[in-house]
Amino acid sequence: MAKSIVIEAKKVSKTFKLQGQEIQVLKDINVSVHSGEYVMFYGASGCGKSTLLNVICGLEPPTEGELIVRGESLYGKSQHDITEYRRSKIGIVFQQFNLLKSLTIQENVALPLAAGGENFKRRMDRAAHLLEMVGLTKFLRRRPPELSGGQQQRVAITRALATNPWIIVCDEPTGNLDSRSADEVMAIIERLNSKSKRTVLMVTHNPEYLHFPNRIVYLKDGQVDKEVTNREVTAEAEKTNEKLDLDLRDLLRDKEEK
Image (cartoon, rainbow, N blue to C red):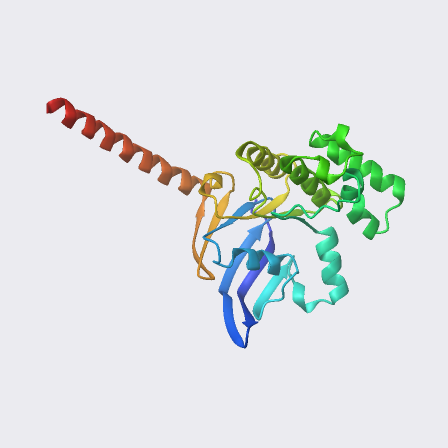
């Protein structure tokens, strides 16, 4: 059975005014996201991928076009409804961890629940449970500066999960991490999609991550350049590797003949 479309950008354009000049960052974007998909927006810095993510998250209204969420226009709703959508339906993980240094990590994770009116014990229990899932139970009372970058990003991921959102949005979540911590964070996000069946949207410019999603949307100069499935990416990589192997064998044979 085909999975339903949960988010759809229809002819979305976004223009910013800077020093009296208009700069178009997004141009007629058409993208659909299905329930349970892992979609990656890939492209060079400045191609518009983070702006598109902000439109999807309810942070930036499009200048033109529509953002449809479960069949309804998001930006046709009241500001209160948009804020509630962002608080309870979307879990956002940024490159910057955005943790409050004065609070413990347990209190940081519980913060979105406090905004929703959840009582103290329930939100702290929920935070403790989530932190246990990512192996940070022994750090409950620590404050963010006492943790490594990778640990802080794991805290940020659990905070994004606090309200049990149906979609996780990640904007360059490994940009400030070393390779080992980055691998751990990417593994957690992959499990959220494959095991917990969360819909995942991710922005990245790192080609090493292209094997993670079901589908990659390539952006260039504010437009969708192409869309490919993970299977197509894998097949292309295999062809490239085969060609490299053949080139290497030819090179070695030429050297032997000489």
